[in-house]
Every structure is written in structure tokens, then in C-alpha cells.
View 1 (cartoon, rainbow, N blue to C red):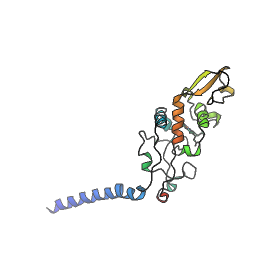
View 2: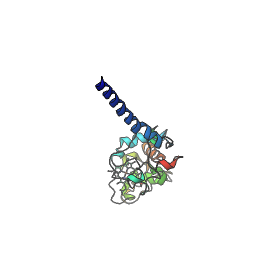
View 3: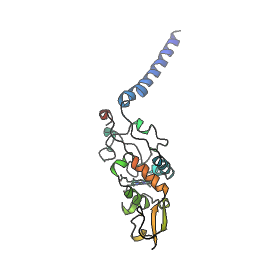
View 4: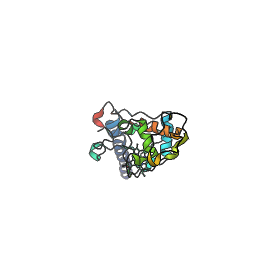
Length: 195
Ligand code: HEC
């Protein structure tokens, strides 16, 4: 009988500690924080293109707390990411490896769609010697009739299209860039507990 009591007490303690550590503690620390906006519409489609193209094999989307790394000091976000940032995301591309910068907040620091189009077409025109592959299949070469289309890429040198042609983003590239622009983790109301 005494043994059974001990076992019961042990079980209670073990589950109680688990509850305290994994439910109560995170809730008190992060429960009041508001999530970043979830991608919807074209941005959500772009999220699937991000996943399908393996961007997460080189890019994370997790900003670590200031005391656990230099992410915030590097300008990858003004605050750490919190679990509720991902609450409405269908795909959560946290990533496992960082060959490139963290992208959790990239829409906040890079705001020009045309910059992303140039980057994805040929990263080396922006970052010479970059490891990032080019994603040219997300673009189409179309005939140039009169003046170039507003979103035609300003390509020169080895990237210049044949005379009479221009290069424009396909819908996949547009969706991907809309997604990247939507990646913003603005500070929540109670910023004090999320640094
Ligand atoms: C092989 C690794 C690799 C892959 C795959 C990759 N990237 Fe990159 N990316 C990088 C590196 C490295 C940089 C930093 C620039 C540099 O120095 O080359 C970068 C930079 C960027 C930047 C600029 C970030 C900033 O803060 O300036 C964006 C945006 C980006 N990548 C998006 C993407 C997207 C979207 C994909 C998928 C379609 C992708 N990357 C796939 C390696 C990669």
C-alpha cells in the first residue's frame, strides 16, 4: 500500500513538473505577445513556392533571443520570434541550416519588390560570389514590343536577353516575392518579455 502511494506521488510530481515547465512557464512568459501577420492569398501561395524550392535548406526563419545569439544585433529582427508568430502558417519553414541570413523579418529590412526579382534571377549581381543559386525558371523571356513592361528586369552583361526580348517574373516569382515581403515580425504590445 505504501509503495502504491509513492508511485502515485511520483506520477503526480512528474506530470506536475512537466505542466509547470512546458505549459505554465511559456504561457506566463509569452502568452501576452501578439503574433506577426500570417501570409494569406498570394503570399500563402508564395510560401509553398518557398518550401518547394528548398529555400529553407539555407535560410532559417527563427530570430533567437538577444541572450542566445547575435541575430538581433545583426539586424535580422527587432525581437525574437515567438511561437504564436507561426500560429496561422500552413507551412512553417523554420530551416535547419544558415548558409544565408535569417528571413523571419526580411520584409521589414528589404522592401523593394524589384530588388527581390533581381536577387532571385541572379544573386551574384547583388552579392558577388554568392552561394545562393539563381532561380531563372521563375521568369519568362517574352518578346519586347515597344517599351519594356514595367516589371521587366534591368539585365545587362551576360544576363542581357537576346535583342527583341525582355525577362519578366512568372506568377510563381511574384507569389514568392509577395511572401518574402510579408515576412515581418513587428514588435508585439508587450515587448518586454520577448527580447
Ligand atoms: C545554397 C544556399 C541558399 C539557397 C538554397 C537559397 N539562398 Fe538565399 N541566400 C544565401 C546566401 C549565402 C545569402 C547571403 C548573400 C550572400 O552573401 O551570398 C542569401 C541571401 C538571400 C536574401 C537576402 C537576405 C538579406 O537579408 O539581405 C534573400 C531574400 C534570400 N536569400 C532569399 C532566398 C529564397 C527565397 C530562396 C529560395 C528560392 C533562397 N534564398 C535560397 C544562400 C541561399
